Image (cartoon, rainbow, N blue to C red; front, side):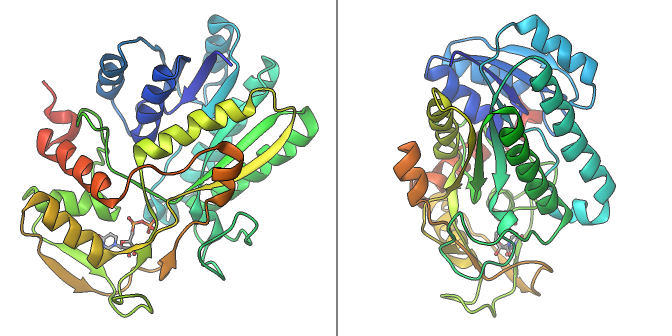
Length: 340
Ligand code: UDP
């Protein structure tokens, strides 16, 4: 494996993954249409890695343009596919937009891969495919039953890739991420949501004085302190899981491998806020609100399979996740919009 095409490489997880790929000696081709991103992280990741990527501004639904990228780039050894819409609430309100973007976009990508004889793919899936799990920590063989259109697009993509791998002899790795948080240790790239839907970016903005308080969505769950428990994973650890997956696909003949990517340790909303207070030294006002529809009490990963088969495990703990998130937030209070 030498040349890796990354869709959504300008995004949060994509940009961190591109750095790790460059640092590991891979050539990187990025395809991104800036739907939820900008060019700035690409420039910064090149600077951080001290290497260039080949960048193409293309929407995956534009199959002709995508095919031209594959033809121009020559031999692409594998694709890491991140590009997708990812807001759960928005997916409930606009399912057709989600199915069109995430499913039709991916189908176009896979057809172009087939036409250009590219047979390896690492897919950005999510723990959301498990829905409300019967047991935690969750193992990869747990039942898949997503509970919202965003989650459905992820489980449908998984199915499409499994079928394609079977029919066309592709090597496929499905990575089911738990809750990615944090930023690059330099503080130069990080999560830059227009409006934060997820807990940590929200808490981060409250600590920075951008928002007044964080609402805790329910404190009557059957958990350690009544608030929701999740398995937070440092985005750099997650990025490295992709590099390990590319290595795993080298010489792997065909078939689909599925791995949970989390630390195996769960933290409650209260614990996250408290750690953020300690790290930032800022006051973080919380208000207890009602449960958010669709939320579950607890979701943690059993990631032993990734450890065994990919040789991957999380290196960073909660402290590093929050320190890096705070560094990025403090350095760039307006995300990439504040960039000079
Ligand atoms: N949460 C919260 N307030 C917020 C955002 C999230 O209390 O403003 C809680 C949410 O109910 C869940 C946890 O924080 O228990 C993580 O939520 P997030 O949206 O970050 O990720 P999810 O696991 O839902 O995908």
